[in-house]
Image (cartoon, rainbow, N blue to C red):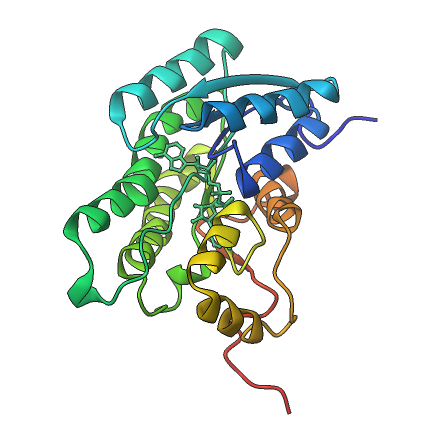
Length: 257
Ligand code: NAD
């Protein structure tokens, strides 16, 4: 039986942990050769080990996705190792501090924008030509429900994720006639190390967030990965420029009777 990503070459950033790790593992299980990137060398090696333990193919590269030079180097390395690219997942991200705008340090604002938004710009800038040379493919960027809402205290994060949504639509428009589909996922509250760390820092916020989810539970990284993988697969061949929320109903905006 052929799997969904047999003979495909894919790239995943932020693959040392959480959603990125679940995407990388899921893709490897579906037959893909997976190029993984992260700034966390230890977590990255663990993800590569998990993939290889199931006889999957993984190539790991440690770098900061907000920097242009190493991003160029990574894409060149994918080309020289695998000679093609079929799908890319620009997923690495950070939340930044939770502070009202009048207390929000500009250095933190700039760092969050660089890691969450500039990285997606850089990723797509250098992935698009290789995807086109490979005969077409697909990109999935990780946004957030914060691309649709205004969570207090999270100005940099929400701005960066609204930006990811906008970038996704522009690059989808530019490439719709050129065989490259570009979409985003908007995860809600997902039980990853990022959220665990945040909950510890702000237990009140965590309690409010849990209550605000109609499904009354956080998501699992695998549930987010499944949506990202569907968007990247041929099953979504006519879907482009779309941001798919995967949030247990968090952004429905109505109320239960
Ligand atoms: P996570 O912290 O478990 O994983 C994020 C990964 O990104 C980490 O491995 C980290 O080392 C890596 N990373 C961070 N900055 C980097 C940089 N500059 N260069 C390279 N790698 C870097 O978090 P997660 O929850 O899996 O988050 C993945 C994505 O999902 C992020 O973009 C996040 O904003 C988004 N998201 C998460 C949630 C949630 O509830 N967990 C909700 C909405 C969106």
